[in-house]
Length: 126
Image (cartoon, rainbow, N blue to C red; front, side, top):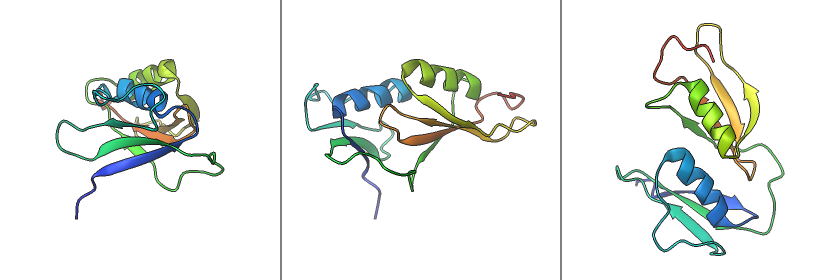
């Protein structure tokens, strides 16, 4: 069995949340997605699981039991965290260690947690 999609519930417009993740991941939303749709999709061009954003009525009430750990490819962790914050993410906790290891926990505009691990520079400290 393979994972086909990772689904995010949202109380706002799925297109808006999908657009945040589309910009963060630098991957396009599906061509037929538009504001007001009940769901939005970001495919993985490498064939991995797609991200699906679906409107639900009930809001988030507790910490996620599952979250994504993101590893920067072409930027440092600090650069990716700054970019995510500029896109609308919220800083929850910085677990960066003095040796540059660790991670930074952020939340997307709907409050879904995700972590940013150390990026391209092994000597980065933030």
